[in-house]
Length: 210
Image 1: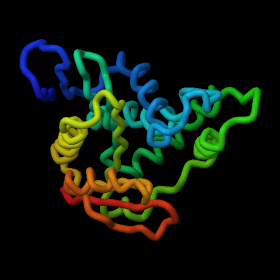
Image 2: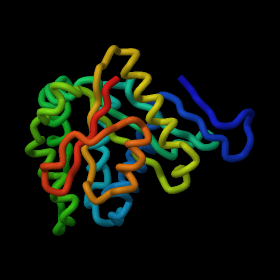
Image 3: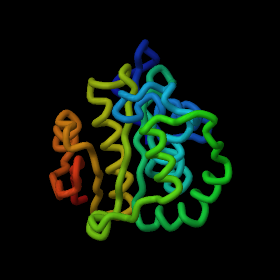
Image 4: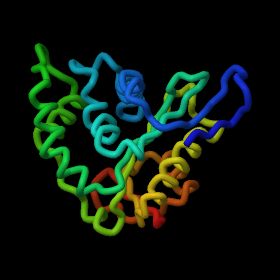
């Protein structure tokens, strides 16, 4: 699947396509650059791969049919990754992904930032699959570099992902985001999501029936 907002090879041509293995170094870079909503300096990370090892890499490995990148002039500038089954992903990560990540992780030689410390804790003790996944089993992560934001690019990625879920007969998808991020909430509502739960401190869960 490939979608484009331009024709030919004109400058700035944007397209959405499935993630290829060769994209992974660039996607790890994007994940680092957009960590904490793009507010975290990349120097905050002793291990710059940590964001990607949690929020991008396992999704591409486990559910490649749900992984898409947005390119501009052929270079990835954003991505959406997710899974059709949150429970299945968690079980696979427990058996295959987290042991490998824990074995390769280097110990910090200096104090790490609060953000990286929190991510390291997630690797050591991954969170349980939320209850919402029983009714809305899929979930996702989407990130765009500033150069790719706007112009409907986020919506193009989202529609490619939702179409992939429908093709696999998935009946619902959820996501969790910062309750203070009103811009993101507005984007997800535009894409068909609605609020499900906001009882967890600082976060909001949104869902969509497919």
